[in-house]
Length: 434
Image (tube, rainbow, N blue to C red; front, side):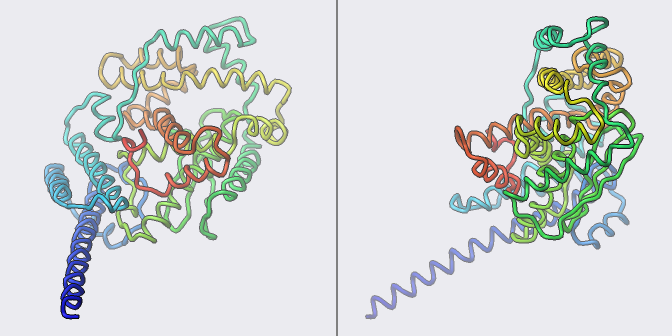
């Protein structure tokens, strides 16, 4: 009996020791997370574009607004947090905390890089992409895009002018009239929301409003406000084509940015108590997951054949457009989508100094098939957001590969949605998608 009692005491002591150890590393992660949030808020005082969303303690935000911050001091804080985080020993058996530590580490590396950039340090396009977004974007030759352009030459109906001019002439038949924009967008949003809610449970109070704006460097933007609420803005500076209705409804709304932010808030911040998810720094690895999942989410919510059917039967009539040319439009758009990385090459060349502004605009017109005014708008986006452009296409490719590999070949809709929703609710970083 005595031996049994001694054994029980030893086991109790061991369990207590393990619980204390677990408490120690989780407490340390919480402490780093709080300091991380405060650091991001302070960087936001130097860079107004940096904090994309915040719904944490208001007093932290107010405190940041009253302080004067120097890049060198912020850099010291970022480095100190990275050193402290490195010393946190998380048991390999605790997968959730391991992911959390990786998330904080990669986000802090990006924060440190952004501070260095604000302090005047220069990075190449690829260096910046790796440090800010935890990714190494692919390179494509001019010949790659030339080959796609030649394929387009065979399917475009117009036979006069450059490929870009012929494409724009053809595409202009599919512009949504401004007075019908809201009607078409509302229908697209309703359909995407209905389909998303079949597979993803969202809070009852989740919602967003749509605003139509002008004079922006982007075509659409989701401003997440917290408590499952977003403001989605659509830029009407330039004509909006029929396929953009589903693109924007899914990318900015369901199952894109709005759903992603709702799930991070409800699953990671509120349920887990992970305070780092009360803030979203734009120039960080989180953006590759956000933009990549938002773009891939378009195909998840409306697979190609179902999307074509919905657009021809619902959106084309609402926009007052002739659906008889829809199939040809889809063939052309499918080829144009293969030119997606042309914008990355323009950004890489322009930011690395191997292309002038004029050359970058010419490249965007020739291989991105932008109208000159749209190409100039795109270059303004590149000047403002720099290597952020990789998050849309390379991010989409990484998310697609991850979901489809994990879901398995010939996966059911339920399985694919399940893997996709799990990704949206996790702190997984881009390198973890490979």
